[in-house]
Amino acid sequence: MARTTGSHSGVTGPRVRHAALKLFAQHGYAAVSMRQIARDVGVQAGALYNYTPDKQSLLFDLMRTHLEELMEGRSKLAPIGNPTAQLEQFTRFHLQFHAERPDEVFIAYMELRNLTRQNFIVIEGLRRRYENELQRILRAGVSSGDFSVRDTKVATMAVIAMLTGVNTWFREGGRLSLGEVENIYRDMVRRSVGA
Image 1: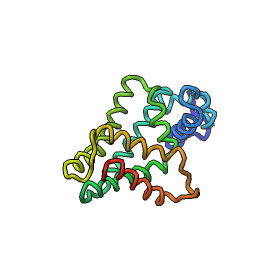
Image 2: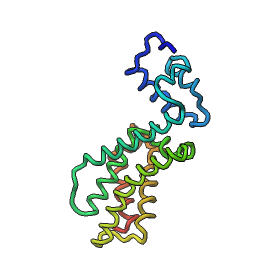
Image 3: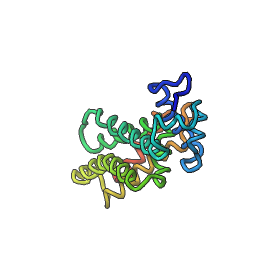
Image 4: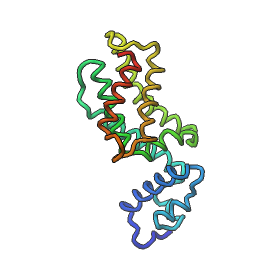
């Protein structure tokens, strides 16, 4: 099939991903058709298949990219002192990273049910790697006596849910700055693990 006039793979490919991201976040994966994505990009529906095999591949790619960027960003942080400092660093990183990507966060958490089994296994593995970083911090804090946590796995999931929930209500330019929200959440997270 001929490419639409003005369409270039280096430009159109990212536009397809961006349109899918916005539409999935707005309407939900199940409610969005390839035809809607094509219309948003400004290409014929058949032309989308030059950039992606199908809608499931788009969803999987958006989730995988988000989680890989999350892990890459986390890996760039310099290791710091004790478990309490590490927990604060994790908290601030999580809030900052996700505040810049509300649509990606929504899709990464709300659209898991729409992944095929094989894609779900991959995404779940990436999520688990990130969760394991926090759990390692919590275990170290329990071992050092800095934290009092009965079950580090449950605490890990609770902290991540609390931090990720900020995206549902935080807006830049609102009553609190992101830095102020980080300070509040730093204190809440510390209390939640008995620090």
